Length: 132
Image 1: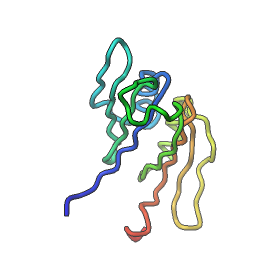
Image 2 (image 1 turned 60 degrees about the vertical axis):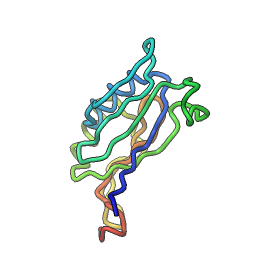
Image 3 (image 1 turned 90 degrees about the horizontal axis):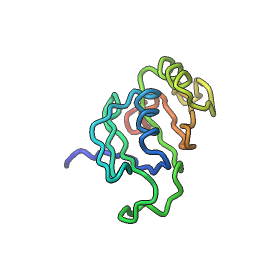
């Protein structure tokens, strides 16, 4: 069986600003940005530990998710370094929703919102199936 990879897809009013924020705040790597007349049709950002996120500008009629309001969503990312990442996110202007917390199920993490309102949670929890 082949490995499954999950890539959240998000829409932003200002996709260019979202890309800059996600790179600065969370350490994503900009891999591809395809544009038409200054609008981001598709962008791919890789996460430091693997996987990534796809995003684009709201208002594209060819996107199957165009009916979603921009800035809607919640993404969880596994990280080995939540403390350092939290400091980086705050410094980049993320809005803290839940500060660094040691959870009773063994995870250490936090939740912030990006400038358009998407919730981003980062933690050490890798899922029950992984034994963590």
